[in-house]
Amino acid sequence: MRKMKCTTEDYTEKDFPATRKDVFFDCYREHFSLLFRIGCMCLVFLIPVLLLVMMRDLYIITAISGLKEQTVENIATVYYWADMVFGLFQVLAITLFAVLFAGVAQIIRQICWNVPVFFGDDLKKGIKSNALRFGFTAFVIASISYILNLFTASIIVYILFAVFAVFILPVAIWFVLQGLYYKLGVSASVKNALLLYLRTVPYTILLIVCSVVPFWLVMNTITLLIVKYLIFIALALFYMVPITLCWILYALHIFDKYINKQHYPEIYRKGMRRETEAEKKEGLF
Image 1: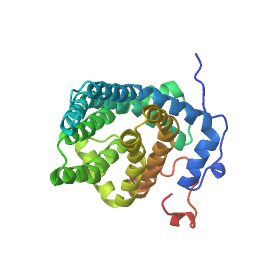
Image 2 (image 1 turned 30 degrees about the vertical axis):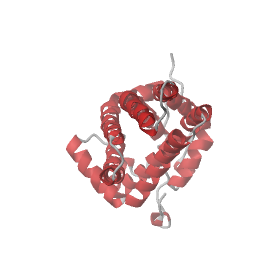
Image 3 (image 1 turned 90 degrees about the vertical axis):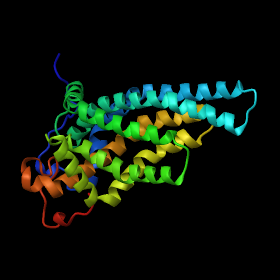
Image 4 (image 1 turned 180 degrees about the vertical axis):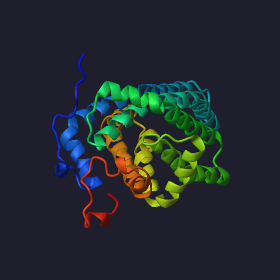
């Protein structure tokens, strides 16, 4: 069967966007249906995560209703066992999602570069190229979060969570993002990830907050279960793609600034117009 292109127009360089912000809006203007399709894929990939959330909630409701004495200690025990058992399976579900999401990231990278997208082939290529990096990183991050979540709240645990959120998680994200563009070993990738994070601390933390907080709030503050599940589905369908697009565009900006211009000129500002003197003073995007 003939490959179906998702891009339908030919561009000359003068038609390319001048800034990353322009790229973001061009992606939605030119590829809205494709990005919605990617959102549907994200939702499908997150089904195991959502099912485990539902099973955990059902277990908690059933276990609490079966308690002879609904004391604070007994209810806390129910939640602890739920977190221990279902949290362990969530680590595996998140790892599986990350492996599949490697293909999604590959497609979004192609869209940002304004090159032809072959949905099935690019999805498979992305999974083949980056499944190990995405999956291993997700497994480590999810495992650390799982272990920390089992400890009783204390100053030490809060400090460990802070170290995890402000140091380990950001470096892990930059480690993963490099895999979309460069063929580097683990040690070189970790070193680069640390350096890139130290140069981008405020914006990296901001993007992490924008990525994590909406899902955390839905999972931990909404008590009406059907509403929680529907909002989770909406986030997977409509929010994951734009926030991933922001991550990839910001990574491209940083890679162009610190790496590509000197070492990989062939991908410097790829998919964008060549810089004018005025545009060389470009800010974030």
